[in-house]
Amino acid sequence: MKPTKDYGLTDEQVEAEIARLTASEAVKLARYEEKLRYRRRQYLYKLRDLEKKGKALMKSGITRDVLEATFESEEEC
Image (cartoon, rainbow, N blue to C red):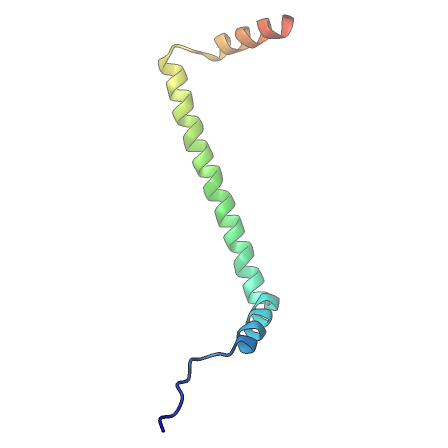
């Protein structure tokens, strides 16, 4: 009779390892670093989008003065 195959960790071992890693300070630190990195990248993407939008406005001849006048007249209504 052939020996049974070893498929690695049991379900209980997997859950125990997840619990251990979740409580690990190293994992918490790495998660925090990922969060900060993600936040900075999102800020970069937002700035790029704003630059693109600003260039389109400038190309259309819209200036800060035009925008201020437009929104001032809307507030008077």
